[in-house]
Image (cartoon, rainbow, N blue to C red; front, side, top):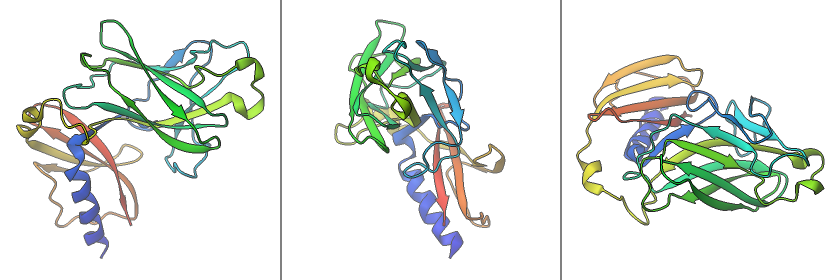
Length: 236
């Protein structure tokens, strides 16, 4: 039964694999966030777990004297805008308000915003990638962009974020569907959440003799263009 459950979960992950790219998960991917503005980025394991049981998340602590655009930046990216049309971010704050992403492609910087409406809970925010952008190389998050910082007290000053993911919104379709149809999976790797490689498989995901213990795993796939994607899967 355990193996059957695993196969069903992984088959679902494979079906949607090319529809998303993990940009940052706080644990194994995108863990080089740098300080933007006047507050440092920390990686913590004591973030609120309800709604986001991940091992770690990113956090900042802002003060009344901070720049309103303070947050975190992540460079060295290559987000293919012909494949993905949105970016999602899990956010936890104790105040409502606008969260802004700054997207850079080597040209004029682009800014996109989403409204955080559920103080005290994790909320998945979605940001549309602006039309006409080149591949995104740098991303910055400003979680307090419109908040009156002079009024901030206590835990209102804290923001967590996690699971930054580029994905294709199937309601609007791929920018270049033919590019996706030409991709062939050449390698599948299964990792523990601590980054230990458990198994490498050639081609598409075929598990016949592998039984994994209950828990979360990372499945990374590489296609014939060298493009890699990674998703978390659960074994029940």
